[in-house]
Image 1 (spheres, rainbow, N blue to C red):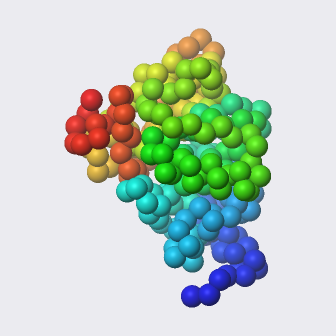
Image 2 (tube, rainbow, N blue to C red):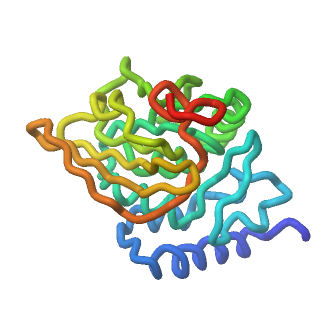
Length: 226
């Protein structure tokens, strides 16, 4: 199939917003606006660009995926971003979620454990003009202590439990969104809110399925929980 025109891409994004996001209850106007503008097709392989705005995840190489648009919107909305936050993202992947966050927060710190993905995302985000994003290659389950605390933390991979360092690095009043499940085949999307007194509350946002959260406080590279 030939290269899609700017008008076709605009229409595809608007249909995505209307049919996949609004129709499923996403209400944050800032989230809907940025997802209606962000060039998701640039964050997938060229051969898959025509499927970029479909209601499904897509492979991005290295056995990783770009999440379906609805999940990106749901997790982003749950962070309750107002524009002045410092956000930590665990799992840069293609950089698409990073770009969405960069439009909605003051600064984004993103960790990726797979070097080729991190380098590719860094190059693309720079080409697109994002200057409020800092990427690094590291074990995301340990967070980024040197840059903490964070107003919001988002984890784009599923682990057996919430890594304790992420709770520690979440600022008072902060929000954390992470897929959690004892099985590697399915998770629940959990939102954690840390009160001004340091107490945390958890809300289950529904079932989901993500790639493995690998690291010291997640799954091992092979098949078990560390």
